[in-house]
Image (cartoon, rainbow, N blue to C red; front, side, top):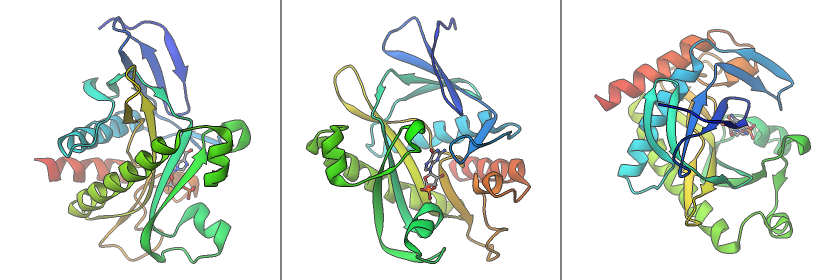
Length: 242
Ligand code: 5GP
């Protein structure tokens, strides 16, 4: 298909306009960054792996009533999506304590949380994606009260679905980040991607705290076998869906 101008280039994806103003083309890159792009590298095959995993998950989520931007995937590393304006919020859901939650609260890594924690971060690289309070969300007018309630409900629904799905893959869903967008009808759609770049995924059958990691933490923490882990996640997803 003919692509038009580049609309946006992020750390992991390039978004292109298409001949239809209601449709964008997302091109997934092999580039990897961490710690607000202070660490940079390449994960061979990541673009295709993340695009394929995200495409499968978005299709499953749509079948479970969760509206999202996915249309189809014309190539392994490309996704046609509904044109949305991204809400500048990162919605993080946590089931087990890890990452910044441990750093900021002292809760030991691996602690099971009684209830899923839903958090909002301001999607702004210059500010380092800070954690937002409800009052700061209001102050910045990043979303209406009604949209915030919808985002929390949608994030928890996605968590319910994903926890079950990853369990079938032999994977524990520790936490993940979602992004949402508004379409031309101002309808909230789940957007961006759901992949080992955006989820913490632990192998259920592995107890070693480093060996069990199947996600971007392998890159962030220089644990090695990054490509193998991403590939293994993809294979498990494909197996569960056949
Ligand atoms: P944390 O706040 O512990 O660093 O991240 C929580 C979860 O959200 C992790 O699964 C992490 O991968 C995801 N996450 C948070 N911020 C970002 C981000 O800017 N980019 C990506 N790819 N994932 C993020």
